[in-house]
Each structure stands twice: as structure tokens, then as C-alpha cells.
Image 1 (spheres, one colour):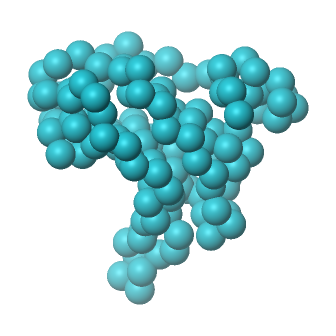
Image 2 (cartoon, one colour; image 1 turned 90 degrees about the vertical axis):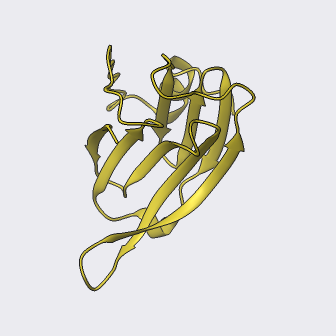
Length: 126
């Protein structure tokens, strides 16, 4: 499964499509197991009105400003809050529904902006 991951300083966050592109989930790593594997907590889940079958173009946005998280997939929006358990170093990742590669990736660095200004620029209407 293709994955795009960026390092972040406050926990590991993932926006992922499941079940052949019908379920959109936001996950946060909460701790490392004794064998070194991250354990994840589901923060939000939404069934997509329009599924994303393998080979079909789709758009995923994943925005983290402070503890506020917004994930969008083909017009469906999931909003949630990161929890304190995710305060260790980690990454921000986007995972698609199949083994198709990602194309046309854009990264917007909002670091250095105030939380309100960053949320406004990112289109996060909380």
C-alpha cells in the first residue's frame, strides 16, 4: 500500500482509506509495543458516500494544526482532536486504498504561524 509520511514532533497521525476505499479513518499512535511496533488509536471514522475503487483518482487532504485534525477525501470531511497519548515524536501519513502510487503531492508548511491563522489558511472551519 503506498504511503506518504512526514515527520512531526507531536505523535504519529495517519489518514487512511480502508475496505476498498469505502471507509476513511484517522489514527494516532499511542505507544510502542515491546517489539517496537506502534499501536494505534482510532480518532475518527466515516463511511464515504462515494467509494474510491482501486485505480480511481482521488484527493486526500490531511491537516494538523495543534491538536486539531481535519482529513478530507473526495469531499467528505472528518474532524477530530489528537489526544495527549500521541505526544511522542512520529509522522503524519496518508495511505490510499490500494497499491496504486500517489501523484501530484503538495505539502503546505504552516509552522511559525499562530494556530488561528494556520487554521484559516488551511480552510479548517472549527
